[in-house]
Length: 392
Image (tube, rainbow, N blue to C red; front, side, top):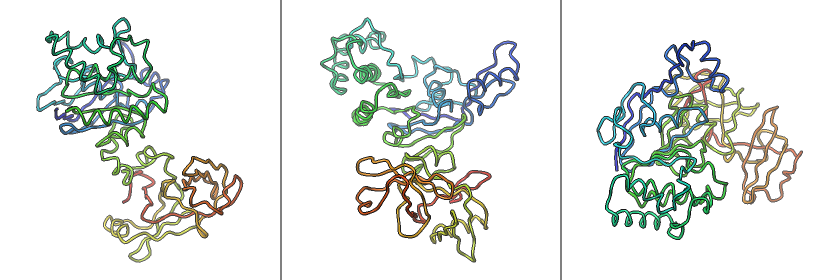
């Protein structure tokens, strides 16, 4: 149980001795991290990171590879030095506190179990280092094993376990310490899709049973949406948006967040026009005009926005087939069970619609067929072309 505060955290990886800024930048580009800032001091991996995490909150850091999320987690753990800024756990400054004294535990992507030890011995190990009484160690290990459903594996060695079982052991080894903060660095990325789904459910159940603050890192936005109380979306070392799963899905702050959150990805119309007619606004997309709602009109008017070229976005689940609207030719029709994913070409642009199969009776949605589609104005997202910020 702990509050965690990160205040203006910055991480710079210094250049190697004698390495010039030009050489460093070239090396970074070779690693395809061309968006990270390279300064005379070094490569800036995380900057201007501010976050207040409440007691027992489940925070998820999410973003593409190289965005700085794992680096941030490692700074909280004490495995990376903080270049500037302040880290507080329960109001105590932790910048110079050794990892072992921070009362945290960490679960790694690679499990990191000792192969020569049994499951019980792996889970006992951190408690033995603390020189705890044997009866208390046994009680904690047995309780954690029961919570995670691995009691029957306590006498086995890691090589005799499946990937999901090993990950449970790694989590068990972390929670027996009863840490104030539990850090998890992409713990499910080595599992197959079915196991990932099962382990997500296990982590949700675990969270309800232990009084710990969770900080969880993933590049999988499905994990982020299902696990987190709040999601921190990162790109190029900067926080893009912090909010609940519903907030970042329904009100993305910019084009990056809108495209990153949601599967399939949001449809973007790059040549849309916002048109102001008197006190009302409408959006023109591929020659089709959509009148905006009163709430949208008020929001745009309050910002003094006039007619302009914009990027309009609409999620595939909000695209519906209709008798009138924008015409699209179906390139690929994917049957997904209860819904069908229609990949269409409309005016030379790719558009994806996710339509319930119950709404497709009597409709021809085979590859090569032509349909018409539309969407509700209240479900449209409008982005400024230059700043890429959400206008609403």
